[in-house]
Image 1 (cartoon, rainbow, N blue to C red):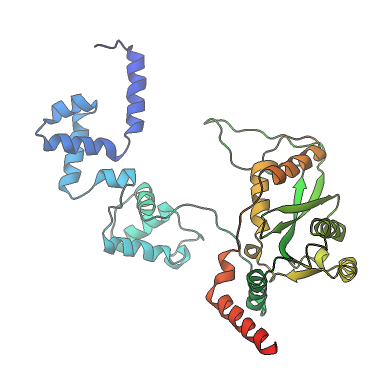
Image 2: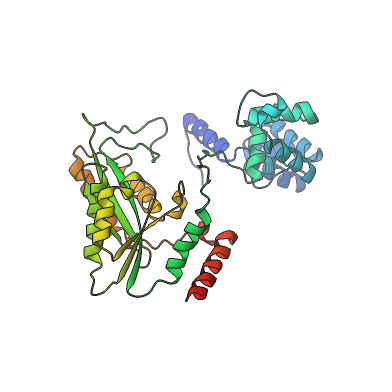
Length: 357
């Protein structure tokens, strides 16, 4: 069978072939064919490459290099000593080695390895080494200082509530979600060389959703308000009280953060008039301890990010529909509640409770 390809089509297919086998795959084929006693000329004709490429792959093998491992990322060509030296650099700031920068780059690592150890490597080689060692180029995250002296006891108290939760009790985690008409921009699939445009509204508007997630059932109860005041939180508490009637629930624990609207005087008066509901406060700056943050993050990813709504009420309806149709949310308490220090505090509180009883 013979396929008739025009010269232009052959050029295009050769370019695609080079991209597909870029790096080590071509070298791997060359080495296997050399092991079968094929001549460099025959290999070059068979693999549609040059004879110099065949000789380069053979020379790299004789020098102890593994080009397919370096380029494809299937393995790291570094010896244990070389790995130790590279990781030792990464454990220190670049400024320690005279660089005026905060994070390491592949180029600065390659230059430093050359200065200190005489390695002649490129930035791309260092990048492949880092990938082989399991390192990735990612965005850093900000973490607040945890200086609350009662942090462990507060986490232990919440965990204790969950472990002792009775059938006529409920444990909910509450927070507020901003819903801006101005779209949150984020990543999505798009053709190479193009960029999806998200139109901004003529005038930005916001709505605020207060939600409470039931740890036992996974259901989210919510209410929407025009402003982020204690009114939106009191509206949520009204929704919660209705959803958990007195003939079925004796106690409702609502876990919240330390935002000012949760401690407003109007909320305290409402709380005093509704003794079935008890507010439980999280440690300051501890978002990982509130599972509803994950639900709200998922809401931004699936609804508000890159949206094309031009009316705020339609966007709010999209958020409500998402919470209704994509629930229930089978999250659990995060590992922050199960550290050794929190577990020890839980045991201590249980002992204290038995002693009082």
